[in-house]
Length: 208
Figure 1 (cartoon, one colour):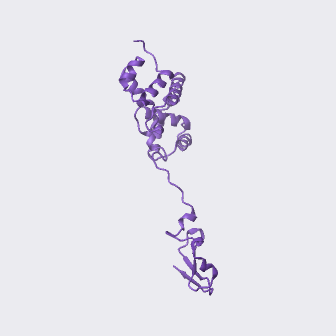
Figure 2: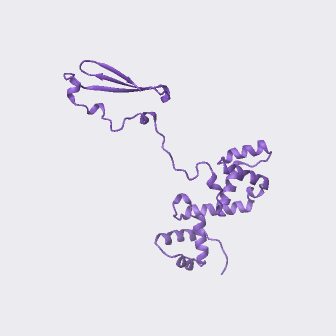
Figure 3: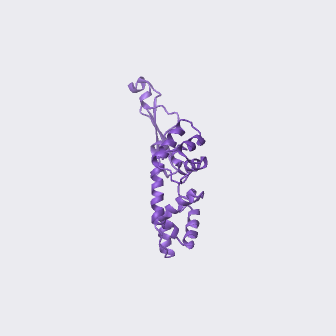
């Protein structure tokens, strides 16, 4: 069997056959590769962001980039052992690659660009390493920001638009409007509730 790399047509074929539920062995036989080669191809090039789905377009692009980088010589392969040790140490504290790059030149007079550090981390992951897990925000779920207005909403509140019409007529005593007043920038410990009776205009302030 003549050795050759998987090309874009091969990868498109793999994607289509996988979507149809065909086995790796039958795909390998049709393409003239061993089942282990097809298995490695799928495991190595299935992006995490695609939730385990093999995409031939993205895979072919990644493969082309890898071959181009191999011909040019990977910049991260020229990183000194001292620089690698420092990068590992700083990644353990979840320091971002751009900050690490600045610290290396400022504190150790070692020049390693941010993009080179990212490629080094990517290559480590391709080899089964876990440096990428130390990147800031890696694996952390997105936390929705809560506006100040949402923070002060009263649970199960009834909006003013839902109050009975008779309250607007102000002919019946006992209908109150309540306003909550919080300290500046929501930092003050003082909270006041203003009670205003609609018919008589009585006003009551309670603070806590």
